[in-house]
Image: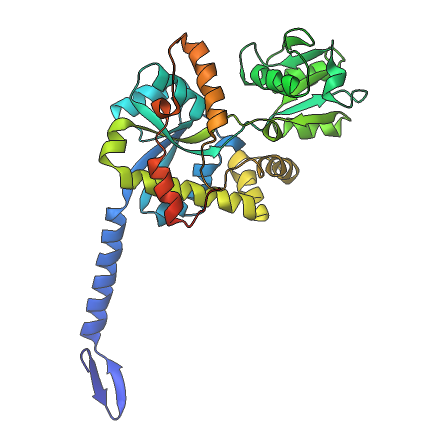
Length: 333
């Protein structure tokens, strides 16, 4: 047999063949490493909404798709110039991407991994429903910010006029809003996980969850149009890695909690509370909800003072996402 010698009825592997085999294995490993595509994905901060790609990197989903990926913490103000200069390959904040596209920059939303904000309306113990907030003051972070917008939509959903039936108080940080609630300065506040967990421990109630009421795409994949034209297969592989990471997050409770402990440097109690709040919100298939995207577009138009009509296709390109979904066997409704 080739590569073997026989001695007294025994088959012995030739040392030369062993050496060649080792060399070929080393060469194959070297080529595989060299062949990995280097990409950079920017997120604004290490926070649960942005879990998808850090988790995809940690659990090997990006590597499985052939990437040597860097997940960069980058202030939103420098992300767009970095994308245009080629210093990064992808953004992840959908409202930022939509505003930038409306302002005339050549980029598109390619997929969505967090189709709604995970914001909770937390009230004092004596208030048991949203309707009971009529005439009351509610703490938000800032006028025109995410908490303000979420409060308006929640109020409308429960039949309250957000301009007439409730008062808002811009308090600032999560700490400050919870302190205002404790001191009785406000009847309720909008809080993200795990601050709702802190509030419940203090005896307050969660009376509404934003993701159960409306979609407002938060986190996804944003690429510039040059990348879309030149590297569609790369984009598809990145989309697949993100979908795999979200599926892992939704199905592997313990593994994801442990990841949150290590990534966010929080204890198990807070990591568990964070997981329970976010797990139902992470998208299993990367779909970008059109109704939610239209809300984002309208808010972006106000922010950029744009009066013209803006269509979904002006800010999003979902053709590559659909290919990725088909390859993963995802059947959409």
